Image (tube, rainbow, N blue to C red; front, side):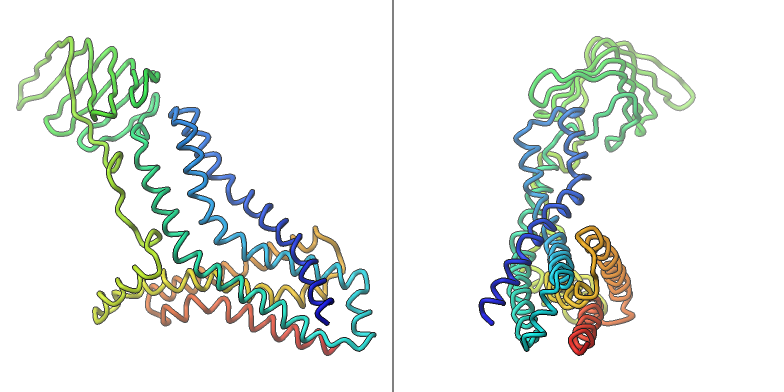
Length: 351
């Protein structure tokens, strides 16, 4: 039996890696396009682009690893059924229960590792991503678009990078809400290290009561409001470790309704981690009932993943509203999918 268990686990391993690769590729396309835009239009250095991509990967793995577990079970057990290996095992009097039990234990171990990952590495990576992203000073700069900067609205006809955190703009229009002031300048230098905008060769138009005045200037400096750029990023819920969330829950305890969103965030991470078990339980019997190859397995896995995350969204919504307990709301998808899986395993093995 041990040889058989190792054999089946080996059969699961390569489809699992394939699943991680294909799902991660799909889920990183959006961030790749965003980072590509930062590199080519904002001229962000390639080192920071690479670091942001690495910092984003843990959030992707948190989702794609459970998906890969489902796909590997569907593909592997479908192949074993298609090539009559399952029939041969049953014909030889081999009980499949210990084999399935071994696979479930393996998924439990993986889930435990993912729970630790989701509560430690993932929030740290989320914080590093936010911190790195916020330190890109020229995010708000765009050519031929109206862009806001606190009290001001900018329009820049043309932009050109002149150095590290130094940009030159031509054809500048600025509207200052406070003071009802319109400023036009032929060119400007954006110095993000000093949070300073230097306007050159321009004119200011301003209404003061019923009077209207204009002022020509050769050079004028304006302090920029860069928001979070260059500042230490504060930690949001997704950036808190499991221990920090538990501490926050204790601090909020006793406040009516307050801990709901904290409990949801805490149990969401463990629930998604242990979806590996739920996907294993439902992937095995559906794989045994499927007699086609990888393409069908991938299609079924996408459908099951859609159903799971639909249940997840419904559960989170009900939990936030207080319709059901937030802990139950986060574990509901695993209980439903895993329960159906156990039922199907029992029915399939009897057949």
